[in-house]
Length: 197
Image (cartoon, rainbow, N blue to C red; front, side, top):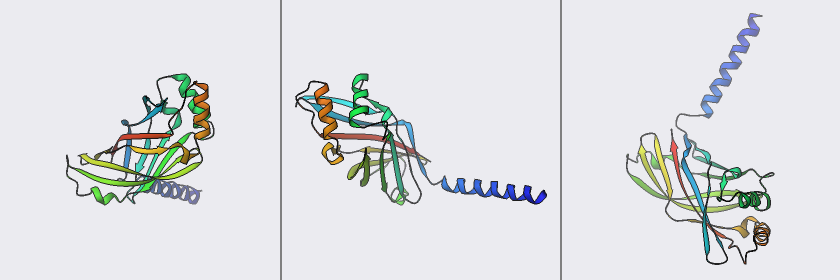
């Protein structure tokens, strides 16, 4: 009986150790409440509207692995019927509840960044929307707000092409449902995200 108890304690301790290692103190965690992602849709050639994803999740690990999750349910176009149509016909939310962005960014590039100082960089990302993964590049400005806090802002919009993600049929369905002349497949995206340790 004692042997079983000791073995159980050892397993628990090993599991706890593995979990703590996977959540290294050196990792940066995205602060969802202090982060936002906006995109602009253009319809009928001249009507531009700013939309948002209200929830972001992610981390920047000590080994450089960057992972961002954007729940599709966080879409906010400020018109519920439009949100529902985008979920259903464009982003197919029931089957693909997340948009993901992953990359590899060496965290030592900000190791010597002093508080209130900034650094520009270009970050390559693997962006997955529905079934398609496309490599995009984001020009960002990283600012150290405190020893344990970073702010990352886009310096220029990230231009996404709906055609590359196989979303044209969905766009055409939205166009027809809203009785529009057209919806531009090019979508500028900007973001401001905060990471904490």
